[in-house]
Image (cartoon, rainbow over all chains, first blue to last red; front, top):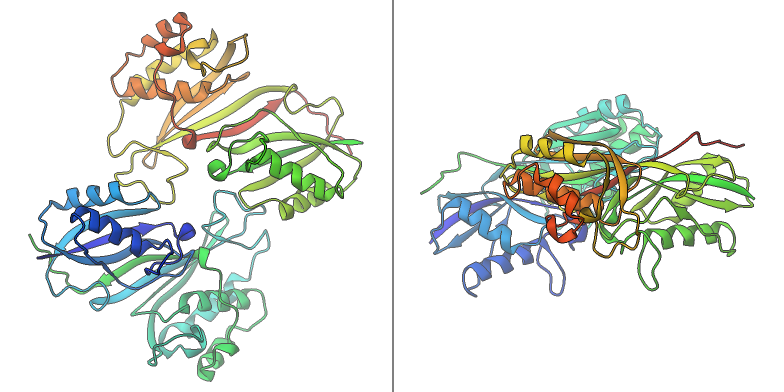
Length: 253
Length: 253
């Protein structure tokens, strides 16, 4: 058996999230269906770096799976893309060491979140950014608030109250905001993210931009360790999983 | 009664074309439904510059309708956008002279057609450009072929065989090809277009780019006045109605 790592992009609009669920169209179930076809009805299960919610997009999700087949990497990519629906694309394929694990070997993840200032939200962007209308938040204040998220913190206030994980300590290594072409884009990089953490941080930053909170409120809210202290979770369709990083992936073959 | 002109953008993906059809989701029926709501159940019908097929997009479709209401133009735009689904957006509204007619007053139209060279077609572009794979057509040959379309011709060979119109003479004033960011974009401007004419021209240009036809074949095929002589119609989802022009629109109010 050989282990394969693949980079996957998907438009989350028409999926009930990443993870397989009975009777639902999910990214994982579509990938696993394609793998079963390639392996002539033998079940092969893929493992992802983590799940994403319904409506959330990915340009750089990472999966791994084990296979007895020995196709060239370009053939793997093409064979999967022929079988997959067009809202999922395999961007890259590599053979990796058997110790590589898409989830457990991950050392970091980057997400982006997009808001649009366009006076009229383009119908072509409706599922790909959150419309703020022509009203512009105070981005300087939002920038100021980012510093309080950076570093190692207990993010209990900034994850879903349904979060199962008991260790809520995560390190945010980078958090930035950029305005370009009528869009405001938040980029966040860290060692890992709790359930709804990126969308809750995005919602909090926007609340600061709207003047509902002061930048320094973030510090207090983190200390409270209470989800109810923070602002609303930002909508799923503005969020993109951009990249997953690994230490020295050993590529095989 | 006042006459209103509106510019409409739509993502054609989830519509059975522009024109109302019983039991189908169309752009026109959604617009007319919104108009009925604004007019408290009084039927108001909109007239467009022309229909577009299922899957075809628009950034600058033009409609007109008559109304007894006298809202400000920004209020009109906002009221319609609140009622319309997000894949249709009213971009601009103006009061116009009663002689203005979205279809009969039009003096020209601009369409674009997009192909993608990306090795892997982005899942976010799947409905918005036609994927050619990493293979690049001979764009110089395609450029050469464009000259034969420009000018006043009988376009019987380059429209659907189902075209009802008997006068197939049209003037193409501009036809150009531009490559940018892994995309090839055809732009065509003329006094009017027959059913499937832009997509048939796009299909022919691509056939020239693939070497299946010589550029000068276009001249012969035009002369044959036979749809079967030309190449396949290009897919709907690469096509955009960009703009409709009018002579000196008299804006009222």
